[in-house]
Length: 371
Image 1: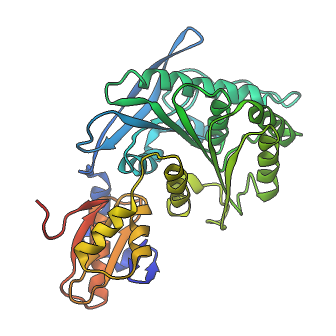
Image 2: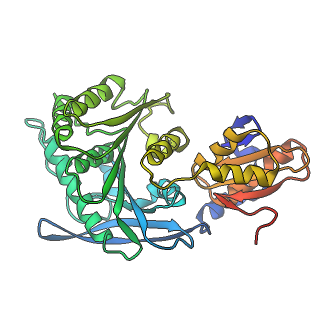
Image 3: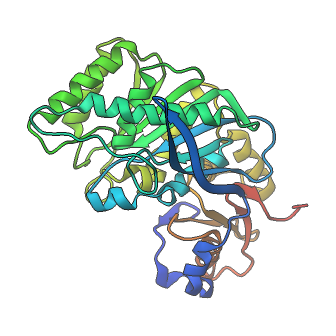
């Protein structure tokens, strides 16, 4: 996404200057704003040892104990299950790292390179709650391991998932584990190709609502092809019937089916996440960050657009013209930081502005006065 003062447009590759010709290399380049690692979490579940594929990221130079943002996968076709990888979730994990979290993607048992197998279900008696509870076991085991890290604050943990991952987060929250302070379910639910699957899912959510005391944030696109407004409302009503409270938001129709909101719709829901975190005193960007940038640039207006930049997913870059006070920023998770820098500068070039320069990369100031 590219923004010029009050005009916005989606990144269109033919508009981008020479640097984007090497976009594949740029996308692979290491982002200097993050310390990240790939590997396996070695967990114990019901007395058995498993390796769960994972990705861990925090802001470069982050010090002290960080809260944990645990992100987990959904489900899909057999091919998608076999190929599941933390790489798909890396952009969202970096978004959380930029907000002050140690973000950890964990791929549950039976998916991708993780050990174990998926539950064997038959349509004669769908095991919706049983399946979600087994998946929640994986998250709890991962948290137990992560709490032992020296850079972790074990008293502040949130869990985030999309689709089945979102429903798994809800299932974990119903256990009220120590340190868990937030559940974020994006397009959450478990859909089986069996009769009465939705009724079974609603029953499970009703039971989770009886015990859950963890703040929940649920987000659904209005055009979600799996869990449309009627289905999402059924889940909300069942969950809150047990006296549990959920911040429930419907997002305007997104893409063609809406169910890819977690990965592809960062700009559509990250602002809702920021509000959820702020209300609970949890880390995210601050409006003082916006004021500081505006002061550096000598801007008297456009506060909302600068705030949008801080909300926007990574990677992103901000170009500014001192003479015209116009700015262009670019974000697109499909491409690397260098590609987004080039795209932001391309906006200046198209407007015939000659004194543009990059002043921010992700949320880091790189303009005049940078030490």
